[in-house]
Image (cartoon, rainbow, N blue to C red; front, side):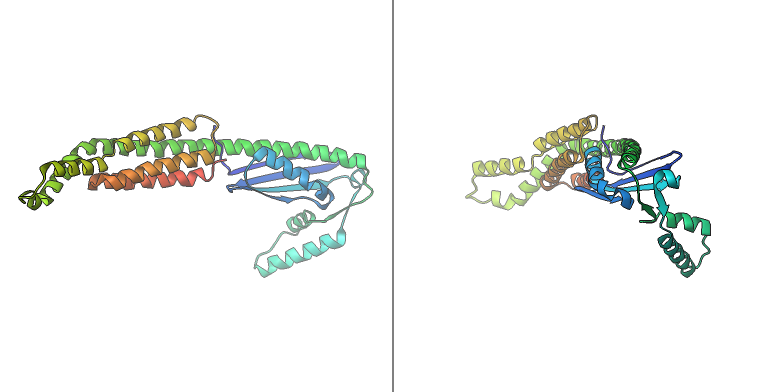
Length: 294
């Protein structure tokens, strides 16, 4: 089953002491590019989070957001950083005013409370911190699971699209195969007409002419390209049924493109050239989609 690099996963949990929410967004990227937004109290855990995300999500641009809101001030050992929250609140209200709309003070206060360093985490025992972290990790793993499910769903949608594009190319190849036998006699006729004056020359070497004619006809032969293209199309569809990756699918797509280009350059036939253009159009759609496959 193929997986998309586009994904989203969220999870949350609330206890009597704390509220935890996690959001993970992923987009396509050639490499792993991770951005983490964590409360200051857990900034020392960022490397652990990054390693976990890279291990589970493998590749792509990953945006991770963790929000931790204490509910019980005494139990959590957390106090509100009132001067900073007030500054956030005033700035957000002023920003809303400058943008020309009335903001809800309750909503603005909620946003201000979620801003960095809105809470002072003092006098928290290591045991309490460790317990909180275990709870946070469970939420993170749950969000990762949802993100993977999202990726799998997107992968299935892309798989259907891939199959449609390949079927279109396969259908166009069938038309090329049907047109091919009509092409060579026309090429032979054009060559013979262009050589008519030369043939009538008294120094004309008939054997040499036949050898040259065979050479050019072989140069225009696309039999091998048709077979290889058919095999590549079948190979691509087979890879869709296994746990393939975007790099491999992109490589197969390049091989498909190579055969299509060769058919186009050797065909010397307007009908086949039009079919080749249509095949290239479908192939570009495939290449674009492979860039988003994990």
